[in-house]
Amino acid sequence: MKRILRKVASILVATAMVAMLGMTALADETLPSGGVTGSKTSTLTTTLVIKKELKVYNPSAEKVYGPNVTYTYSIAASSAGKEITDADGVKTLTKAGVGSPTITGSLSWSSASLVDAAAAGKSNTQDIEIDFATVEFPGAGVYRYKITEQCSGKEAAGVIGSADDVIRYLDVYVRDGDQAGEFIIYGYVLFVNDSDINGSDSGNNLESVVKTQGFVETTSGSTTIDADSYYTYNVTVSKKLENDTANEDNAFPFTVTFEKPAAFTGSFKLDVDGTATDMADSLTAAIKHNASVTYTGIPCGTTVGISEKNNVTGKIYYVTTTGAQTNLANAVLEPDATTDAVTVTTTKGEAGEDKTVEFTNTYVLISPTGVAMAVLPFVILLGFGIGFMVISTTKRKEEQA
Image 1 (cartoon, one colour):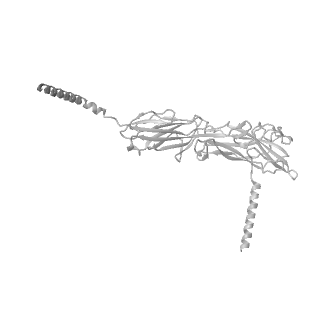
Image 2 (cartoon, rainbow, N blue to C red):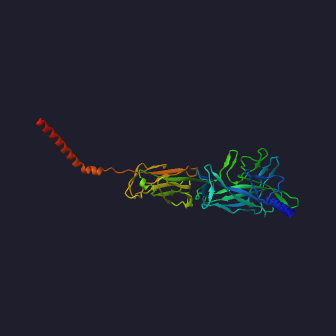
Image 3 (spheres, one colour):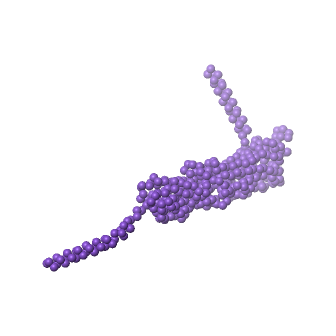
């Protein structure tokens, strides 16, 4: 029985290994960061994967809610007659792309989902698949295609990037197969420019060509192609009471407003102390002494306004704020009244910093000035009386002496 079990286990392991090899053989080709895959002896799959990148910035959060943005893609024939020189000095001219390869129609990010973020920017990528399975190449050669990305809602979503239409160029390298009329893809090269390529003295990294992994941030020599970026920042509103231990458990009402740049017309979502919240024009919060509320993932360029209401009966506070652009300094806050709004903001399209705005309410007892004024005439008369008695007593003693 043990011998049979060992044989069965061996067969299962072998089957799994064969299956894994088969999956590897059928795996899609993915362009590395250098934008080139394949060699003269390669046999590549008909499906190529390129990348779309959204770089997300936040000064301290590792996750924020993403923008609402959708990208669409199309592929078509491009230029013929561009000269290509490989590393060995062999030359050829490009052919216009043929057939109708399929491409991922669209991809999107949504404010309903969290994305990765970092102070220096964090890459979030999605795959774009291009399939040449139905394309019948008429012969060996290098076939050039143009890939177009379109996004008309980029600004509305708060995404900072290049023009609405972005172009990449894909060269598909085809050679003869073992059978007559059989043609095999042995290389893919993706780049930014529709130009000649001379790799004979540049290690296939000629700066002017800018080879790339897709619609991603790419650096070639001194040339940098930026990825689309989404910049966010965070605002914390905190509360303190001075000289008022009786109301330390009272939750003071705050109103927080969000004034977005004119171009940002889409919907946005924030993390408010662990809760996903739509970024309406105005939100409310209730904050106690030594407590705070943090708004995470505000698109940079948005101005945040903060005001506090006094909901304590019969008490007047002097309110001082720190951390805002224009702070309150001992502003009088009467019962049922609201402070003027203080504001914070960051620059649109630039990495922001965390902002903390602290409201300190100081309660000072009013001295009994009115009572003192009320008894003052009697105090004066009493003083005159005492003085007269002292003088009279002194004079009487002098006379008796």
